Length: 242
Image 1 (tube, one colour):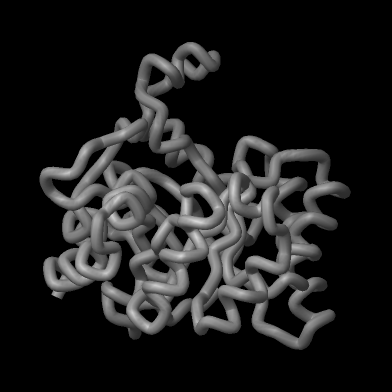
Image 2 (image 1 turned 90 degrees about the vertical axis):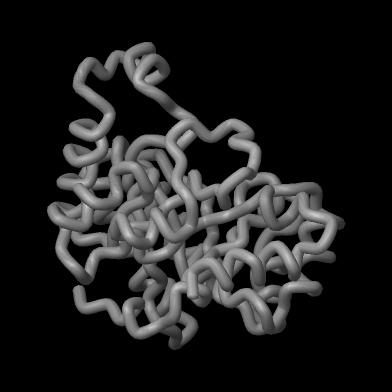
């Protein structure tokens, strides 16, 4: 799959995660319109507002990353991906641990949904290991192999399924880029500007480090959304990237 994200500036590949209460998220989205290119909607916002929020954000000029992390039987995930694509989402996620048939079903659903509304097929991403997890929590889940080995093994499943790419921490981005090639989407949460609080993130890097490591896009939430001036916080990140 040929992708053209490298034609965009790094600033335009920063995804602002609206992972906060609904009123605050909408206010920040209005504030950043025309400044940021991408926003992420997670479960908290989606369960509050549904597809109406996606349509509103699209009207404000954003590309929308719908991060619902599908993980179910293939039939259910195919329908979910179709609905997500029909809502206008530009990027969506599923857990790679759901297996190749489930991810193949998601890709079929995304293609069908995009066809139904005459739009481009959204970017389909497989979640590898959540950036809040460390080796201890991974082992508690019954995974004995090292973190990077687990991430790379799950990325192999995403490649086999034919989806667009993966979500992983910036720590694994370089190994993923070497393995998956220049056209794969590698979207990295766990990105924090220097001096920012880590929050619940365990495997982190700065924005520049993440891109240098091979990320196609980075996801930044609280350093922007919790700032007194979200526009200034975003612009500081953009200046660093330039």
